[in-house]
Length: 120
Image (cartoon, rainbow, N blue to C red):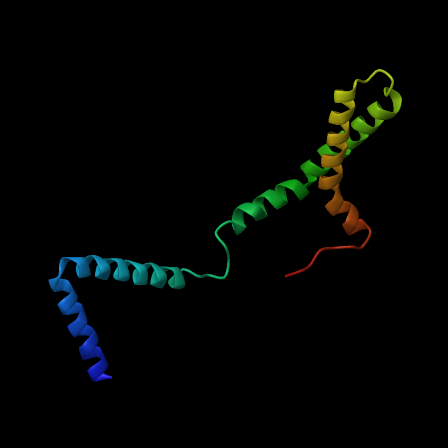
């Protein structure tokens, strides 16, 4: 072990003598340091997990559910009772509103049916 460490220190010292080798050594040290920092910062969660959890809670909360129910009922009633007077763009917009409302309500609907996602 002592001989191996001595050879590495000798190579580092000789590398510092030449300019090109200094650049290579700096690049190697920065690479090793960045990898060491990356390995030290692993906490088991990803950096965007907190943001995604906040968005998930906002989209599955009581306010989002209430707004989705109202949007679903309003868009459905408009399509049922006013379909002759609506233009093509208005109908497409109401279909988009229905789709978004179903996506937001989908979590609650599946929970009522007893179907839930994977639990980690």
